[in-house]
Image (cartoon, rainbow, N blue to C red; front, side):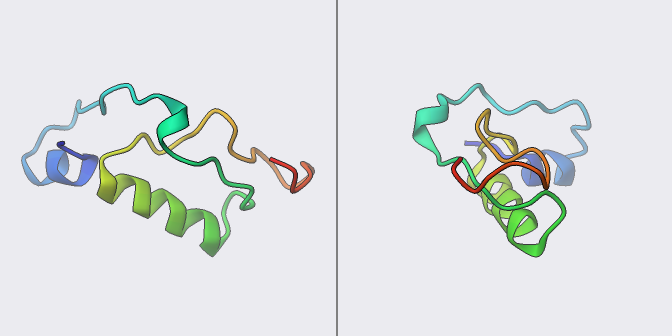
Length: 66
């Protein structure tokens, strides 16, 4: 599966990852902008997954229940 890092190396600046069922990868409650959230995004990029999960924590105010 091609990921965004492969696309950048190939000069494909219009790359969009394939749609992936959100049940195939976990959402995160990590606060946006933290090292924890950035590491999760990096892991997703390396795995060829979408960066964003529909149930990811979106801001500081949300509870950790996501």
